[in-house]
Length: 126
Image 1 (tube, one colour):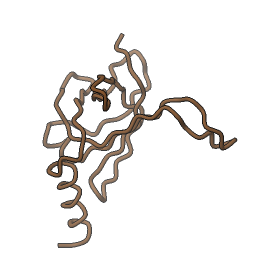
Image 2 (image 1 turned 135 degrees about the vertical axis):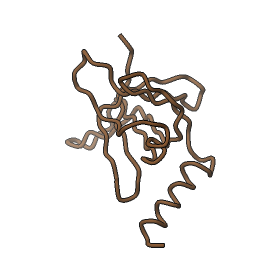
Image 3 (image 1 turned 90 degrees about the vertical axis):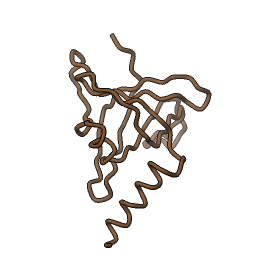
């Protein structure tokens, strides 16, 4: 087994079997929805790169194993900039059990490791 295969096997264990991930509900623009294991973050303070000062904002991201998406029947999530179209969505509860709904604005697949990083934005369905 090569290093890539070993890294992918370790990722599968971390994301699917260790219990260290968070459950989210992924929905594609056509309405396909399913529960996915993911690593998430949702923070409210960021550093302004120009000034180095803390600023209030919301930065949310998630990572999902690509094979998990394929096994569930999804294609690769993408950001959809046209606001008249339905976006890819990811819903998950925060640590206090409050449901947060996000649209995917950017998808960054790592096809070497088999993980896709998603940049999220708070979303309220029209």
